[in-house]
Image (cartoon, rainbow, N blue to C red; front, side, top):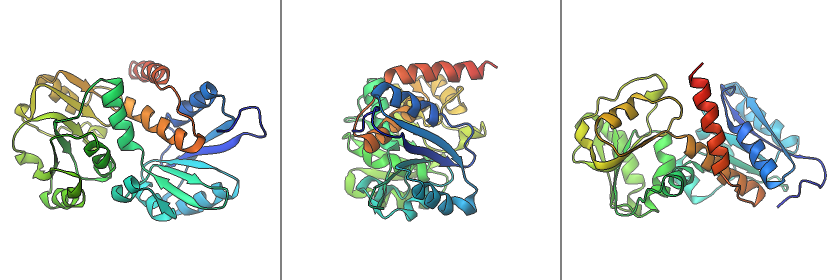
Length: 284
């Protein structure tokens, strides 16, 4: 753990395109102040063709860690030299650690952030539950292993094309009961439904049947902000818990901070402050 009173501030940041909307600089600045860590955290807007050049430049300037957001998570996974098991299975990373010997290590903290938000912030136990993930893209890949580590009864991946969902289920089949279904033919009902699609970005509806969520079930939208069509559907379907992904954003950032600095920040005050910022911006 580094002390705020020693030397020049260490360099961290987030890279993506576009990046102006990112809350990460605000989050990590708050973490640094809270934990008395001397660092600066910058947002880097990288053109896709310049991504690897930007990484090399950041490293050459003494940068110690980067968060990675869309559209670069898979490219970053291929770029780093070392991956932990969660990142290897996910096929995408959101955290890079630049060691002082030049080694680059990649992590995916999205799933940890999701599970921490559910189990600690929201008090929702995943043990013994039947889970449904909507979508079989990169967002889904990053959360499956951490979800399965919470010992659910089963996990179903629903995707518009069954083949893609089936391949993803097969990749993680060694972790437990994981199956796939076509999005418009999802069988059964579930304790928790997680929207890992990008539909909410465009305000699109997924046309899901109400019976997918069990009585007193839960719905989790991985995007954050105003009430999405998915969450409105879950509310009408009778879900007792509906929530967006702001808590996941804060908790995955806290895990990245812990990887880099060796100290775990308190997330509750940061989440409360950010919720006020998001709600205020929605009213404008």
